[in-house]
Amino acid sequence: MVAVATVYRGVPMNIQKVSYKDPNSHKVFAQSLRETGFGVLTDHPISHDLIFSVYNDWEKFFASEVKHKYTYDPKDQSGYFPFRSENAKGYSQKDLKEFFHLFSWTKLPESLSSRTWDLFKEMFQLSGTLLTWIEEQTPTDIRNRFSMPLPQMIQDSRETLLRILHYPPLTGAVEDGAIRAAAHEDINLITLLPAATAPGLQVKGVDGRWVNVECNPGDIVINVGDMLQEASQKYYISTTHQVVNPSGPEAQKPRYSMPLFLHARRDVALSDKYTAGEYLDERLREIGLKK
Image 1 (cartoon, helix red, strand yellow):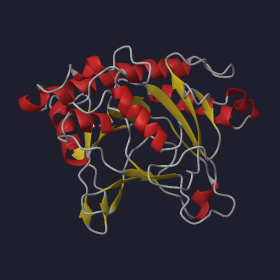
Image 2 (cartoon, rainbow, N blue to C red):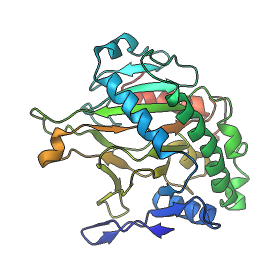
Image 3 (spheres, rainbow, N blue to C red):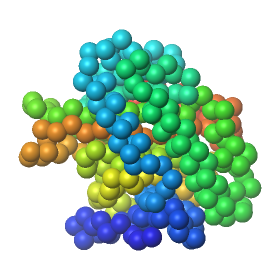
Image 4 (tube, rainbow, N blue to C red):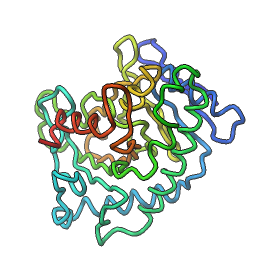
């Protein structure tokens, strides 16, 4: 395991790159989340070929007008979200992206193969291990205040979702302030993000400066979400991140990514203030996806 050697204007952000096979991986991984909100996992059990093939399947889907047949229902948040459907909390500009929400109960578009479900299941299984690592490395006084063990919070959750994102090429004029994904924090417990097809992900350091997240093909980026921050009394911090617009020739290329957002069941108590369901509904209203 090594620290990702990413520096922005001389300020280091030590997001740890951790081999899943390393005997000390659980300790270093949890420490990276504690210090930066992020970690990068290598040598994990999910096949790179599977990830690559799923990206190929969805690239074809977004290129087809068939996608509009699956436009989402605001009540259940499942399905296709057209270009510029979502804004980050506190922003009026809509993000330069389109995406599809796939829950365990969502009907997969007919043009897609079952490889997407294979990836969903394998990432969910891996997430249980990662949540176990996090819980084991959390101080006893914090851990004892969890309403239940972290891996149990996601069991049978209808809110856990795979979001497949397409950021189209920036071929026309982009209005001031509009970027691929404005600065935000994730809502859920943790996020698993297989390496995207192009760079652009940045994390905000404690000094307020933005740091590029290095993630090579086959790596998985994991980050803390707001629900884990709430449940851990801010022992783990949900770090602000964004996806910036590329420049030059790269601006003519699309970008695809597919984070798995691990959500606690709606009835799970995150704290004395919120259940997971209450927290989720509040945040969905803030980002324009729910009324």
